[in-house]
Length: 499
Image (tube, rainbow, N blue to C red):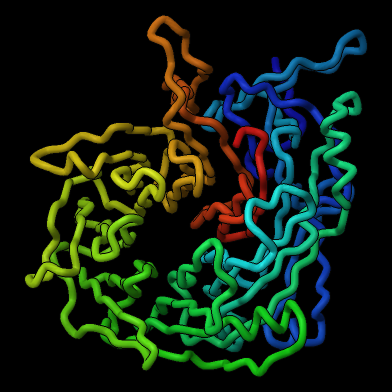
């Protein structure tokens, strides 16, 4: 019987899908994921808690193993190394079976935990250059907390957090006989990963947070606006540029109150929030969508909402090619497309996209007629918006996830690749350009715990695991292949060998 050396129920995991790209085994990096607080005096006093990050030389801290990929191994014999078999999520564990961790499927993998859960975040653009490939990397993000109860004190104060993740070094080294890789490695330096952050007080938990768009060739804007949707029903807009400047260099005065607050939603909280060149879209649980425009004189929110949905607005996306067009996803199971020039403020076209709530959508920036949606039933569907007539069918339909989809996002440059996360603790990468020959056997198969067969879709490139209740993911627009994810227990920043 196969033997697995770590407990599958408690230990985090990450793995590559068996798509024909065989991973190479590499030694674990002993310093992976260690973050140091370089702003101790300023940071800890403002954050209200200390961060908890990384892993020690054994890949653990406080008994919690670092993220790895899982493989099945046979019993070790002296005559030959153990055979490996890719572990498929959902596979029933046999008596005495354990999981063995392996990181060879990652170029880099780092993990960090904050004082409170941060269930929404966005990546901030920086001035460090485009298409950065040389390690170590630096990434800037902005996030918001969902603080819990403090014994004897009630609910803790929430905050918006501006973070700089530095020293994100390569955690996998190439084989010594790979001369090209050696030359590439010589240009890199190894650093300990660091986390620097500053906080802004926030009234209520942050349901969702989004940064205003910045052109790829532009400098960091001043002001740099970030919007939050609070559980109180208010949408706050902050200027985070002074916080970025303080972390990056000389300190600047930092305003700890919003520069603007939108109150049109009343007491109806929401989770849908999206910036575009035209303005800021906000959608609430009462099925109302409001548009706020930004002018040199300030912010203006139209008092008249867009209303066609019959249930809560779950997600919003601006069209990448038409500045007046946006799409919405709702708990009424539909995806709708709108044009703000329509005087009746009703959607132009719609489709019943899922059998349950439509939680998230993402509009392909390179192929502007493609949109991917994720539903409460765990389905992922890719739609051709040109076919949004009568009863359209998706051009791709995947049912790999076993729980609600919580986030989807197209790759910023590869128009056939997208990523998704689910409440089943999986982050999956998909490539629509991969097709399976009719006479070809399934790529891999197994058996679920309930006895049903597992068949891996050929389009599934990679499965990342290890976080609990993954809520949101984003590709870094300036570091090709770098993905950052957040969950109830941690952030992950990683680059895989598959993308």
